[in-house]
Image (cartoon, rainbow, N blue to C red; front, side, top):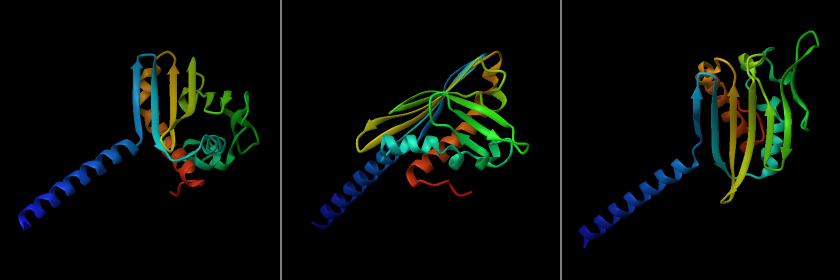
Length: 185
């Protein structure tokens, strides 16, 4: 009798462990280089979250709150702004008052925001730099996705470093969606 109870307990623990591993695997972010060539690449980041489409959109609009200040020209994310409307500028105000245009919103729908975003070293080199934030319903929340399509002569060599920066940006963006505030350093 005791032996059967020990076996049953062992089986239950194994089942519980497998279920935990499956849950953790489905709730983790997926970040990958979808494709690359000599002249471009596609990055995709996605994670399921218990959130709403409104929270996702609000966090996109709050880019100064979650963008890493180390990836700004002024070193201060509070110098960033985003006019959250088609044609709106994701700009950075420089010390002399001039504005640097990082991206422009192409379109906004309830589930998707598309930007022309030749960020950082892609500026002036990319013939296409389409940054798309989207979310789709899933279970009790949304799958939040960020995709970056970059094309231009020789830009395939930038895939890994840009992936590193954008992976960090996606983590900070997701933190903002979940907690409504900037991640702490």
